[in-house]
Image (spheres, rainbow, N blue to C red):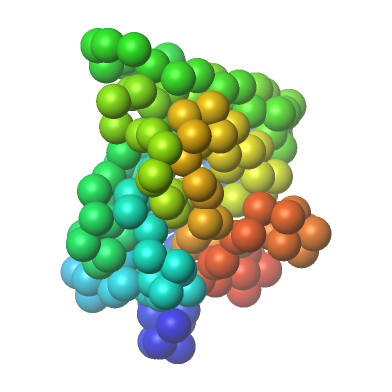
Length: 183
């Protein structure tokens, strides 16, 4: 990955205090979406470690995955499949395959669904997301792929904030280590 992209990701990142009654800072990655050079480079940089494995589809969870997934899919010249969450609004019509994540860093379990007609045997899946701390959502997406008979190649994320053993177990390749983001 170009070192300039890593530098831009760090420069454009902020931690935000959401105000009274909150227990933690919130990551603000909106600067990444505002910068046209970062947008142009994110897709190719995310897929680079997996290009030789020849993914046939990119799978990403709502909400930020709906931006990153198509960028990665376009860089590979393959299609994109969105994973939906019930709390994000209206679910797509038709049969869905569901999985529930293990508890995430806040102890929540997230339900994710993929349209059955968009994922199946023969698919070689690259999972894409913006940030991984526990790998909970990636676990759920891998479970959906297994249920649909698709092969998971690994996960490409922008910021890796999980223990090395989690990254190794889930075959995660990241663009920047969260420890390298400004405090």
